[in-house]
Amino acid sequence: MARFLRPLLRGTTYTRLLHLWVPMLIVSVWLYIDMSTPYVPALMLIPVGLIPSVRMGEGVQARLLLTPGEQDSGISVAPAATWRDRGRTVLWLETRMALSVLGSFSTIWGPLLSVTLVGLAIGKVPDGVPVLSNAQPHWGYALLALLPLIAMYAVVVGLGELATLLARKLLGPSRAEQLAALEERTEQLLERTRIARELHDSIGHALTVAVVQAGAARAAGDPEFTERALGAIEETGRAALEDLERVLGVLREAERPVSGRPTLVDADRLLESARASGAKVDAEVTGPLETVPGPVSREGYRILQEALTNVLRHAGSVPVRVRIGVADGTLDLEVRNPLTAAIPGPGRGSGLRGIRERAALLGGRAHTGPDEGDWQVHAELPLG
Image (cartoon, rainbow, N blue to C red; front, side):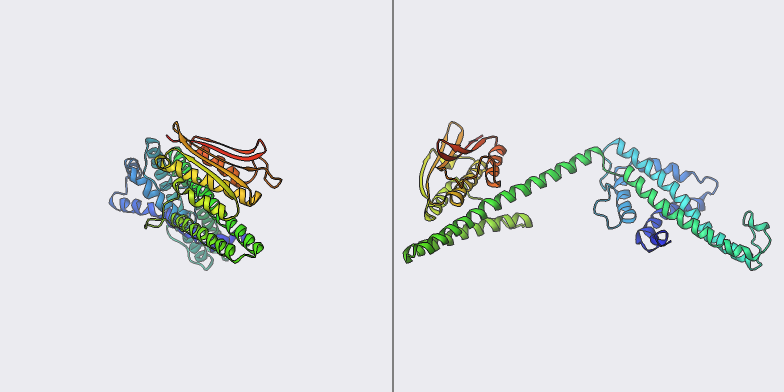
């Protein structure tokens, strides 16, 4: 019983009832003008439904009254873009009017019949009510007085559910709209993945350098070395804060400009940070780095950053060879260090996977893994 009466406590039941009543306002006005042609409003809906913006208006109404509060209602609020959408809108308008007639009939005659039955129970014979106008007064009619109200309640709730189902079917997104929504969702996921990589690379590198520097300074017991280590930690932390501020600016969609992403022109900062952490970095740069296109240079910087971070995290203070070359329309980047037992195997770790993903996004390729006794990160990125 409680489940049967639950819709009475839901606001959606009453907003749907309002949605069913709205078309009857048009019908009522027309019947006041010419009662002999009640079908005219239904005919007028055909050209009206072919107007593209009508679909948007019906979608807004359906969302507001049929599915209030639902995040994903399955009802489109875009204008009709194709003739198929316009045809579905016309069918929806005609269906909505038919449901409105049924709903209005039940909400008018349900209470009227209940009042009539109560009148018969107390001895008052109704006038002009079919069937009951010839009935004889009897107290037993009082027992039937609730039946019309129950029937009206069931019809209203059922028509509301049916209207919602048909709205999702006839006003739902078209295939083109579904494809556009899917593409937008894909773009959002790609952007989130890119931001996650940015945070992993920049913040992960800064934390790794800070941990290595702090551990080395405590073990050294040399005030001068400790001073240099603290300076390196401070510089790396400042750079990480700049990266974090830029990423947070993107997430907030702030109107103010944010600091640009670092490029390979700033690679010296990474190399000095690795050297300050104890790694013996041998760097060789050939070719004009300043001519490398921005996207390639930025991704190259991140690949170098992740490679050096992995060296510090897994191998510690070991010799590192860095080769950066620009020639023949390709950016060639290689980082090698002696292979240790702590180095993860090929294909493991989100950092190594991120290196390969960055290269693939630019149409290049990257290899990470053992090579002739060393651990190697080698990326080739096309410049155009």
